[in-house]
Length: 293
Image 1 (cartoon, helix red, strand yellow):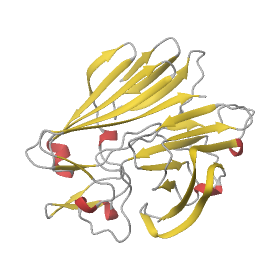
Image 2 (cartoon, rainbow, N blue to C red):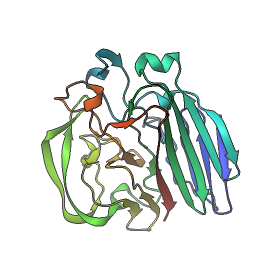
Image 3 (spheres, helix red, strand yellow):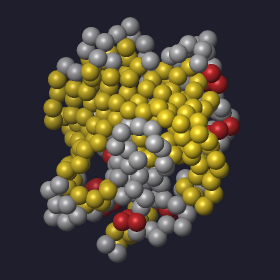
């Protein structure tokens, strides 16, 4: 079911299936979020939990036992309940179940909160360890924004701009979606921005592991239209759209606490890059905020 929150300056719509953002508009009705189109990616802003990216072979080992889980985890495929709602805020909740325990042997409460403050939309993730032992997890966002936003504009006019100058190396993404840190190419050298090109994404997402910046902008150098994102609290970040020369009309800005497995992973869940842990009855929260340019 789709739920709407709003104020005088903006509105957002969220699907209780996966707690997925489906719309983000200004007061004039301008849509900033990608609306799925036939022939292209059918997501809009999936919630990534309890893993980010893919597991090697789709499997991992926890306490000596093998478990299978699809890419980006299972939360995006499950119906959430509503536990709090106001005109400009809504909280979705997912509880562990016999089905989730088959893939992920931890008891949890996972909340996804959306709130509006002016034109700013904050997406918060809250994780609670409802079990009696240490809980391991990852979490992340995957919102897709219209690119280009205007019919007379083009994808190639868009820029990604970080708040600081960065020198970063881009790791190679394998055909099965793993991230190979042994194969890297220099992507930015004391630079704060880069222009988008279609071939840039033929090797999947552009992944960043050592950014100093905590803020980023996606905007058209022709019109200035776009979005900004504050992703403080997320150590990893990615920019993605469909490659293979598809003219996909979107770009994802993805704040992550973890990344996909590497080809030489041990396979142990506890060794996954960026793994987070919670003591029994412990709580964790992290959020990112999007604004309109």
